[in-house]
Length: 253
Image (tube, rainbow, N blue to C red; front, side, top):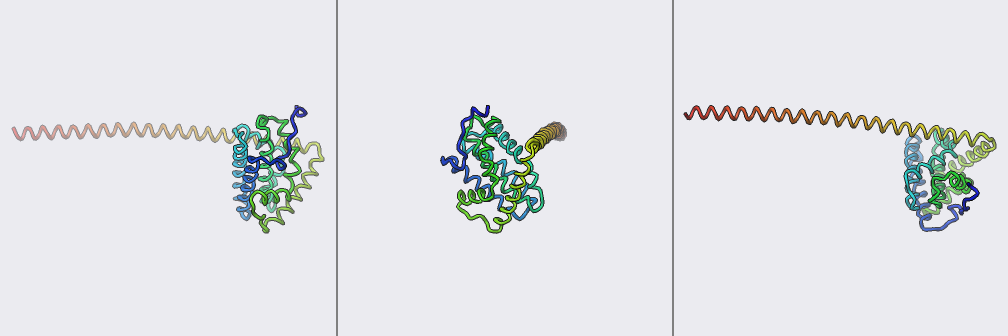
């Protein structure tokens, strides 16, 4: 199936207005990561949200967003970089790797969107990965892209550590790829993570739905009780008024 796919230029070599806008969006996302460079715990949470939003915005800019396509692109990237994802939680390495991951996932989404009709096609996603793999694992390319599409200079406080970390991880990644089982291991772990996330989402949705039903039931009971109480109060008021009228009538008589 893959050999029937048309080879497309890597996104960094294509100059359409949509891709230029999408690249600027990647630069903006990287800038958001740099803002939380000094706060490792918070940066991890922020980066996770940035990456999801980045894919959605990238596919929207390219005119091919669907929730299914967005999820497919995200989890395919995670299958290829699961060890990198794990590294984002390591002390000292985590923050620079979060920045690299944001750059990489943006570039991958842009390239995948060059063939909108194949966004959920495994062979096309694999070809996209093969086309841009050397680029997204390069710290120099990430910095050049950031500076080109944001018009800002990559911060000096982050440059040295970012390049050193990326170079180290890149060498480590290349070493792991020499082992036949490494790629399968990453894919398997990512699939487990994906299933776990979907399970949590389904469970959380069910819990929220059950809680909403219970709250609505309580509200309904409360409303029924309120109406009954108001009816009783009104009835008592009416009875008092009627009694008062009778008393007044007897007095006048």
